Length: 319
Length: 247
Image 1 (cartoon, each protein chain N blue to C red):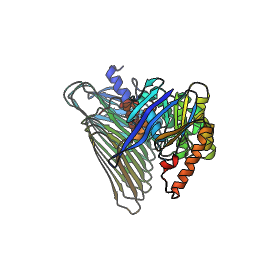
Image 2 (image 1 turned 90 degrees about the horizontal axis):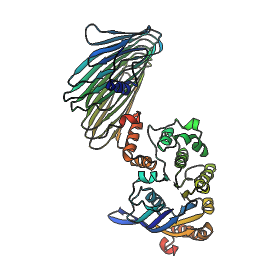
Image 3 (image 1 turned 120 degrees about the horizontal axis):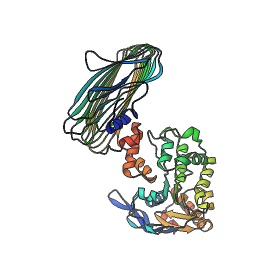
Image 4 (image 1 turned 60 degrees about the horizontal axis):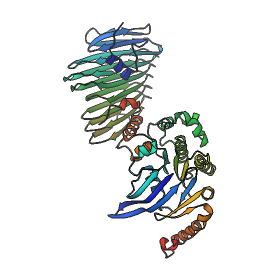
């Protein structure tokens, strides 16, 4: 039976809404080492032989199952790199909950680079939830660099919910996807930066097959002196549809760059984008204060609603 | 009781100070319905906002239940039992209607109050309180949310504006209801509804930032009719200024 500390428990609850070891298939990694793993008849989890990380095989036709693969870093000065590959069988329908929580107690940088590759076989469906979170009393940086690569075969569908709300000092986020015919991908990314944090996100979706479609919906908030760069590129190579919407709130002395990019290599590709950067509407703040909220509570409520996250997650995210 | 003592509000406009409210003296008593009316631009919304703390007075005092609240912020006034339904309801991206009721400390009462304004909880609680609501729906929600807070001073800014005729009457009955229940609540309603003006316990008439009349509807009504005639004449090219006309 794996022993989880109070810090482990808190991180797991925040990044994966887990309270203790999950049911179903799982793989929990702490400070670069495996601490708990379980496979099920439908979902096999095994270690890679050539590099750190795991292979996850979801049997064809699997329905209503989940796999949790959280990563915890609770020491200072560790750089953890992990390569995970998911092979999701034909017509399977699964939930994958990932995420990384860093608790840095010291002065050295703690960093996790997670490279996730997903192959969704014909007709497979996946909902992927990835939350990144940092905390700890140390002055050392907390850095998370996720890279997500998706290959959607004919008719496959994926929905990604990527959330980074609190405590991550630096992040470079890369998401790349290629979609075959009739495949459908939705990416929802929510990022909040505060203080002197930085976030650089690059999403690229290539629509290769007829009937493929994608929506990239990014919402971000930059507070303090933080800076963000968001780039999203849609490439249409067939009779396919894609839309990217980047919506940002800027506060204090923060800076945001938002760069949607469309590239059509087929006259039948329909690609659209919208981008907006603005500040919190003053009347929203005032209205919430007339309901009895303090100014800080009102700000956090508006930001949580905008980002689509629990308000409690923002409690420690002041600028 | 709400007391306004020599209340004044000025704003800078084109490098000059413009008086929006001038020396307002007023007492509002518990258990009574007050209709605040007057021409566009006469200062009605500014007065309501000054009471809620949304606008800072440049002179005078505001006393609520005997306590000077002139320097209290909006949050503190809300926690002291003052509520304000905005003339233009505010929209929120990502916040559901049920979230707003929860924030108002009224999540258990949401369905009942939505029903009072003709909105079915099953259809609305999970909806975003955003731009997807029509103007009328947003207005009804604003009234329901304000009532659900169970304030001791309930201020409504033109609750009838922008809603259909059937709902207008219903909303105007609703905003008077807290004061009618005999629990010491004050309802202060900014309105242009003739029917409501006649049903209120007192009508407060503002003109050009001054409180020119305050009393029972039958006493204030002649002045209201005169005001309307003056204004109409003015807009049609009358040579006398409105201020002279009111004298």
